[in-house]
Amino acid sequence: MTRPLGFQFDNSYSRLPDDLFSRCQPQPVKSPELVLFNRELAGELGLDADALDNATGAELFSGNTPIEGSEPLAQAYAGHQFGHLTMLGDGRAILLGEQLTPDGQRRDIQLKGGGRTVFSRGGDGRAALGPMLREYIISEAMHALGVPTTRALAVVATGEPVDRETALPGAILTRVAASHLRVGTFQYAAGRQNRALLEALVDYTLDRHYPDHKNSDNKALALFEAVMDRQIDLIVHWMRVGFVHGVMNTDNVALSGDTIDYGPCAFMDRFDTDTVFSSIDHQGRYAYGNQPTITQWNLGRFAETLLVLIDDDVDTAVEKATTLLKSFTDRYREKWQAMMKKKLGLFGDDPVDDKLIADLLDWMQKHHADHTNTFRDLIGGELPSAKVYKNEDFINWHQRWQVRLNRNRKPATSSWCLMRNHNPAVIPRNHLVEQALTAATEQHDLAPTRALLGALATPYEDRDGEDPYRQPPAPGEQVYQTFCGT
Ligand code: AMP
Ligand code: MG
Image: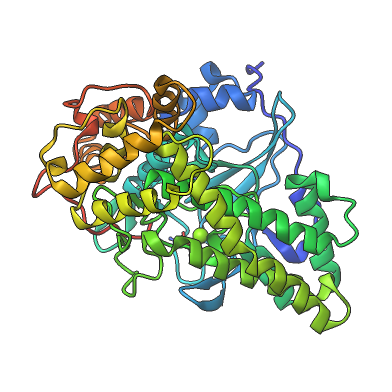
């Protein structure tokens, strides 16, 4: 008898109309080896970490051995990539099934890099070790930062090379997600001009992510509004921690409101709203400061897919959707302001707040201040000692901030506590991520990756100013470009 592993699959997606997916099997790999295994997440999923953190896990999370109850499939979807609509689908990701967790959640378990599917086009269906470790590190960091995200359960090295510009070690990431429904899923269904398919998707998405809206009079409109609100919450988090997603194509916008698809994403060191890392984002479409506007644009594409369900009269449908979409700007602004006030330890509303926030950001932009460390250095209220702060503009701003803090009607300790909870000390700085990945892929040394993961697990904990995980890159260490997760 083998030990029960804790899998409890129920595959609701495979019961949807079969236009939406294609059944397929992962392609076996030569010699799977478990490189990373997320024991804490395994526990949350109801899986037996001890039974899986070994060769058994390598067999299952490579797809070499089927998981009991699994009904593997690749999802169909379309997507606006850099503004252009394309038919995509899971070209290298295979959904194994949906795990029912002990606390009543349903979680997709997906192999990324599991082999070719009918949607692979020219691709090999595979993934390289470096980018899969990168997704593991950054998605787990996001989770610890409190940012909604897909998660990473395992990375398995396949023992096979993948052919990129050079031969690279191959790997498979086991991704865990609230679902893989995306704006692109609706774009695909809308493209089929099949109303029943769209209706099925609306019901399914409401059921899975927005059950409170299941009985709305206008389900499509209610879904649109609910997705918009969660996207706003998500982007406000990204802006808070300095995250640049890098490929905000509509196929990478999850309807659950989670961050999905960690390709050329990276965290900003110096504050600069124009920050772009992705090597293919030549126009800066997905720059840090553009993320809210692009989200609104992506939501517009989502609304278009729903118009036929919003109202039988197309003009009325457009009017209803447009009114909601236009409210994005105010809704975003309000949540962003509230977040920024927490970063600055401000309670209550005060007429000076907007300008205080704007002036600090202007100063940071002008002086190339480190985004993470600036906010963290403000905690405690002393004038911070680093050289960058030794200028009149900053000192003036700091005085104005002190005056405003005094109007909080709360003890100063409440401000420092609020700031500690909203300003991380540790983020996955790109130079550290790259150093860890180089050691892992070139020297088979996982120690820097494990140490980095350890530091990223408690990002809000106090750390010495000299702590290596708090340091911005030294000159020569900066990483200016990241590449798509291939
Ligand atoms: P992404 O940039 O990861 O969002 O991927 C965009 C599209 O390309 C998705 O449809 C992927 O499934 C597909 N894709 C990316 N890499 C590969 C690959 N190596 N083989 C097949 N399809 C791929
Ligand atoms: Mg994608």
